[in-house]
Image 1 (tube, rainbow, N blue to C red):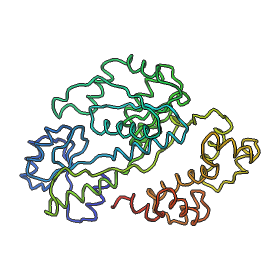
Image 2: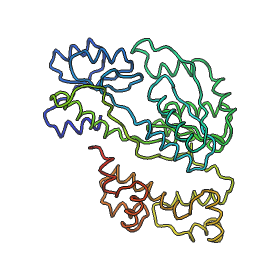
Image 3: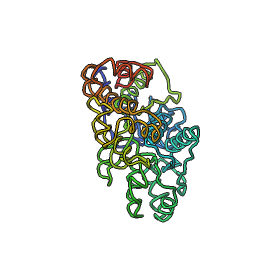
Image 4: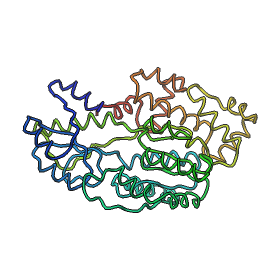
Length: 376
């Protein structure tokens, strides 16, 4: 809604009506009243076909099945899954699992990309197979599928699955709602989080993430940019510059918001774990290896050797990654100048930040900001 509203303000001659009903009857009524296009929450292929035949441009939201030829908004499953895998690999996990709703196309896609990426890294992914419930019509929403297939069948199968997983293990949940449910079940099963089971969600819904115990880490998505791009697409279809042919308006992931559910490193060396935490906790200022060595009461040389053995990269590389994680969020979510971002993210010098971004992303900070801001 923020992105759509931003486009409308820039456009100047649009009026947006919020309508509580997405039935064909309601949309036919709006069409007669002069409605030129619509963003519609729809989940099934059958409903998508009906909307396509309605005679006005439609962009679909909240999809579960394929959308026929309707344009639709959906997160980039490949980017989401690979960001999740890299984040969890960097925490040194060797065991991985996935929990979601395989009947939902976006959830199934996330699992497949997550498993494919980790398979290339010689890791396997366990997956919970819920009971599949037929999707009879568009009145079987995502939450009802979840209740019927996972919650309605009792928790014993899910508890059994969690207890039998190799530990420690990192689990990617398809969305924050599923992750929150999994945390509650793990607590009931007396599973220690995050030391035995670390859980990562998707969407970074603050209300959901912070109500969890421990608070849920989650992948943040650039919803605003997707809304702006969807409004641009709808405008182009209305004006005849484009047509409806199943275009996907992608929601790109921006970063992982780390909270308590993944605040752990699957490393056997407690001194290195402490060093990693020190780097992350102080990553908004310039850091030196000597400072980190002093924080764990160890010589610089000894720390460097043990760090590389445990993590597979140098302390300096870990410091740069920690600074980079702060900088990329500030680039996307604020209008701060580049020099200020370099200072706030601990790079100290702008040249250091430019060098890091070029090495990690292949682009300079300003270009990275342009590609991830609300307007494409």
